[in-house]
Length: 200
Ligand code: GLN
Image 1: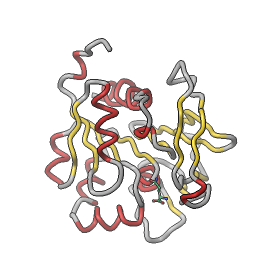
Image 2 (image 1 turned 60 degrees about the vertical axis):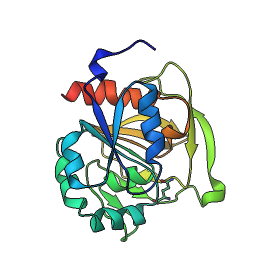
Image 3 (image 1 turned 45 degrees about the horizontal axis):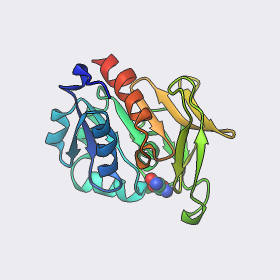
């Protein structure tokens, strides 16, 4: 891959309280982009964008509150670009069908948890994303949410059947699947090139 000088001074934070944070760091590493684990409020000052990974949205809500991260993150996300995957996408939404989960209200939809069924009904599929990639993306869905009541302000970048699965509103990108679990960093690259670098 060509070295990209504009990546040199970028640091992407990955919330590392629970869930698949290490894999997101690998996805960025493959692009030659540094990442940093975000575990306490001070970490938010050292990054150019944030990834909120998958995991369990109920547990992530509790951990973010316990670690005193909720308010600082909510404030930081007023300006910081963010990429939420699966549970991360649930937390970034406007509403959620489960009162144990708190929402950052940064992208306008209601998230329905575990909408494709339980762990055993996890699956993978090939998705086309013509506005992002010139190839199909192998998408892995693990107890994935569905997004309902999506605002017309939200861009739908990929669908699976009738379900939008990759969405963007301004500096907020979300996927209901796990792009960090494949060898393809194409969606991470889109996040950095089209959202992080362009909002600097
Ligand atoms: N089902 C989980 C939740 O509701 C999300 C699963 C995931 O992130 N893979 O939080």
